[in-house]
Length: 139
Image 1 (cartoon, rainbow, N blue to C red):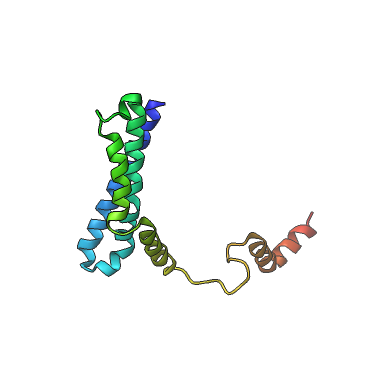
Image 2 (image 1 turned 120 degrees about the vertical axis):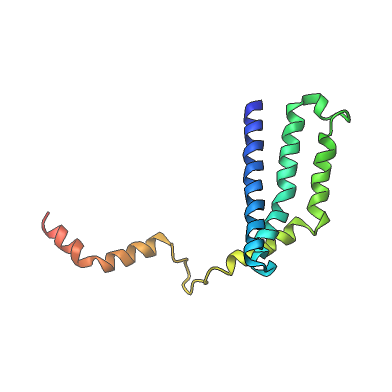
């Protein structure tokens, strides 16, 4: 549906614009690119995909005219791939993002992650054993 493709392109572009603006704001705020490396790498990783998605939707919306050389969309789709390589492969930027994201987390010492539901349930049963026992006695 054409309206869906237009809406998806608008949403994706707005989210990306806000991401770029927030990254620029953080650069101005911290005056230190190392503190904003995750954001910068994220912008670099996201840009080719956003560009490609929007160009591809525009191409599809215009049908057979969209794939002709009379419209810029096929060239833009190809440029989106070039953009993904111009400042280093997108995968390298994603590795940087993942490293910076993982810097904010402490590894779990247990076999299962701390959010593992059976472990959480067992901890809750231990913590509230007396309350559960009293509740079961009254029934």
